[in-house]
Length: 340
Image 1 (cartoon, one colour):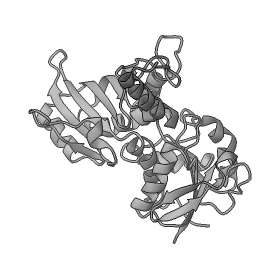
Image 2 (cartoon, helix red, strand yellow):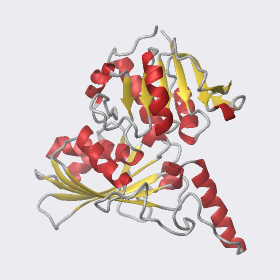
Image 3 (cartoon, rainbow, N blue to C red):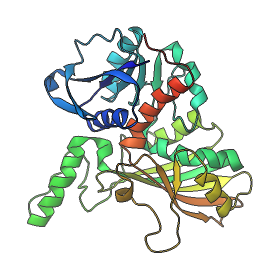
């Protein structure tokens, strides 16, 4: 049995990764359709060893499509997601638009695969924010083992999370500094080259940014509404790969050795935790990989049951594209997806 799969936003960073991952994981697709805006008509994108020609979203008929992976932003998902769903496609959306919709499951397969059973109400499934996805892959097994009460997380997020133009800006600014040219911020509020910016997305009334709010709200929806979450999201001059320093307070006792063993056996997690020079993972090390890496596991002796961990993942893969494909795979494995 094979499936017709549409990738909406196929020319973007995440869309291209979706195409790569569909091919790498041998998703049972009889046809993959690369879709983007009208200005991209005729462009070529790779799907494994095959080249696909972009077709226009505004005239595309989703009838007969089994799975539609959306990676084109909230406004596109808002307009075209319901159209694809009404035509019979299961929409897996990477934007923020549907994440807090009570009728749309928000899913990371390693965290809450059972939530997929509720997708039929709108025929839409949402991916969480990239930083939430990797955090919860690491936290779910620890929560199961000792019940998390409180999380304090600081994220160090690469510029690829802000798109192609942001990656170009980091490159341009880095070069400009070396050749003594002017540095002009565009995608970011301040210079990003050789700098860090404690500001991702818009500011909210309580002083947190929307990116920080997403970490809180999505954790409550996917993992446990009783967990207290405080987040600080920082943009760093890294092209690909998000890192997170996470402080965790548990209800029950859990030692660092117990946590290490729990994480080593958890799906999607890879523990690299040697207390020596280089015995940890950095964003450069994770690029192109599927895993969520956990390093620097150690006790926090300032609270009764506390741990600190360092979590790193490729944000374009696990943070977005891989999770979307894994959702489609999980639908198959649960018998929730069938070809027309």
